[in-house]
Length: 260
Length: 295
Image 1: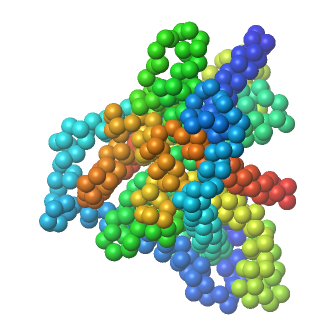
Image 2: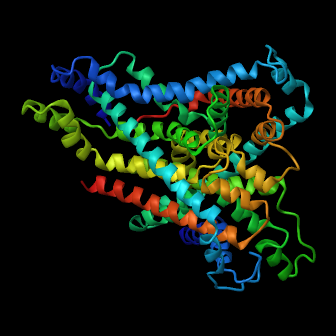
Image 3: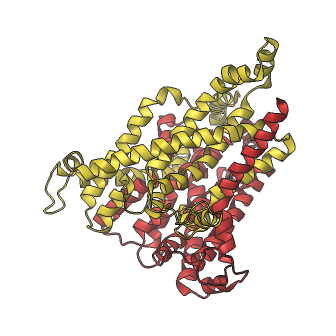
């Protein structure tokens, strides 16, 4: 009986892994295709389509835009998230629960609706579509995440270190910069990398709020109009690789926290 | 854990340790985040509400954007399609993910579990656009599956897989199996082994232990995961647009169509608000199972 369960478990797990990895393997494999269609049979390996991606100015500028929007919006989100988490964790504020709820509220609303709302608002206020507008949207979706991660990591022992610093005469800004930020660094980095990942992959807000200068997922969307194309495979594989790097960085910062 | 009440008691102490801070500092810390949320989340929402009540042509007050939804059968149909797809995706994903998470938590040796789990959710971390495109490669007329089916001699003609509801559901299930595996795995690991030992001591076999102890105790986690699936699935535009095509419209596609083709912001706002209302109703309906416990 136990043996049967084991074998069945293995088979089932293999099948699910197969299902999960099938599209990724197909994507990456046919990005190395030598001929013009990303369909069987495989004719590579060749780096031809990666060359095509890197020599396409639209894609390379979209890549730079994506990195810029992701890093600046994540930096903003993590800064606002950290300051507010510190404020709520260290001081008694009237209506604290309600205000914390307000900050985390965007987590429950779909990106499409957040993007729609900003589109209507910006349209009405005469703010043109731009990378800045998309970046503002990305802060909206990532701020609650950063706040939740950092707030949940603010424990008692950190309060005591901060009190010690104050007792020794440190002014408030010194406590913040020299004590709280270093102590909270793992949570801050975790929030930052997670925000980077979400912003880097985000499509619908960027699609609604940018026009000519746009981010990589939107540019990939434009490529899709030409049907299946190994160039799309190549740029998709690159996007996937960057996401994996960001997630590994996120995991590493979390691991470091656990060891500490 | 008791961190919550520790925090509660620590707060006044920390407050007293701050004689110089006064009342200005705490507000200076939380105001930027609150301001951002009010300005770029709450205000857009209000703007959307106003927009949904104005006429597309002329701009006067009107309720037609909402009444259209109930009178135009194709709009109504989009909501029905969305609810059907979301329900199928949620059920299939839970049924696939639960045994998988159980195997990872119970059958895989402890030291390999972290790696096994990380691998299982690796493709989770890629863009919706890239993930949907990858499925298109697999399901296309001359894609991997059709080539394999014809190669094996089972079929002589390619099967229509892309641009169908089946493709949309497959793309969604792929994503949500990973998400649900994460939440259910966490749930199974939190389960104290003493429950299972107690059940075994009382004479229950592995099957009865699972059905009467493990499953009921992980049910709240399943409900949270299922709700998350519902919310994310019903609001996604990309997967149905790339994989399902325009044969049948889901709500997000209908919303985007109003903006893209016709520039009809009022109608798009009204449809977005209706979509959100449905999510809220779903939340209230299962709120009693969704008591998310704080760690």
